[in-house]
Length: 298
Image 1 (cartoon, one colour):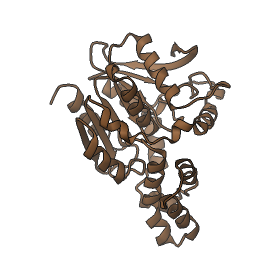
Image 2 (cartoon, one colour):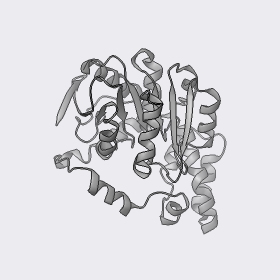
Image 3 (cartoon, one colour):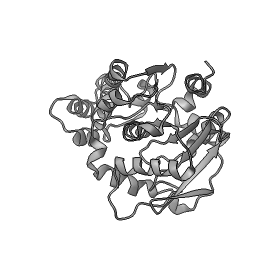
Image 4 (cartoon, helix red, strand yellow):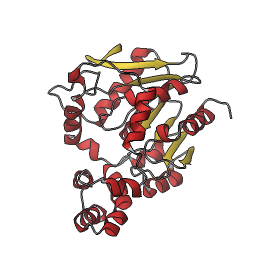
């Protein structure tokens, strides 16, 4: 296992590909998911790019969070410290889900440190992600006659709700089998087969597996997690690629429209027959899109 010391914390990271190729840094979602399940895709991208993939501070193999506050900007600063420590002049942040928020804020705060930015089914706003989830699930609850869950979704979609309240309510949406089928969420058995076939056992100590709980608690207590970062899209000068699964419940139509109308040098690709885990559901297409956009091999 490889570790890097950042702000006095041990951060677990993996490296793929050649250092003389454009560098892509993968920012995992969850929040708190770790980079473990992305390792197969990181290896595939490593055939064209130099790829850095890591567990965010407080997650899995990296040091657990301490008593200090932890927010979005803290994680973003650590990403920049990692770049400096690794001696990488510029790189391309690739953010999945919550990692998309980190990628956008990083690109905004450190524009001279990037060659471009990739958003993979991103969460740019706690409020709008909560609304995207409610909008996707509401028709299913109405068809099933689940009045309680339908009302919950309507509350999230109503006016006057705060981002924090909307997000907390979205966590209460019952992703039962009916909703999963309606929203094209991947079957757990199929995903487990993928993990067993492509992801090596990390042989991590037992205490690592529960670290994400402390990470999420700290993050959900921070004010900047609930900020609306969509306006940042207008300020990014470097190429921006938005990849969204056809049935994704995180980056909804509102966010997609906002990006298409306001992002400079923006390119949107909707990946068919996939939902939130595009890199798993359509791996060849996923790799192809990134390679064609950023490797120079048009």
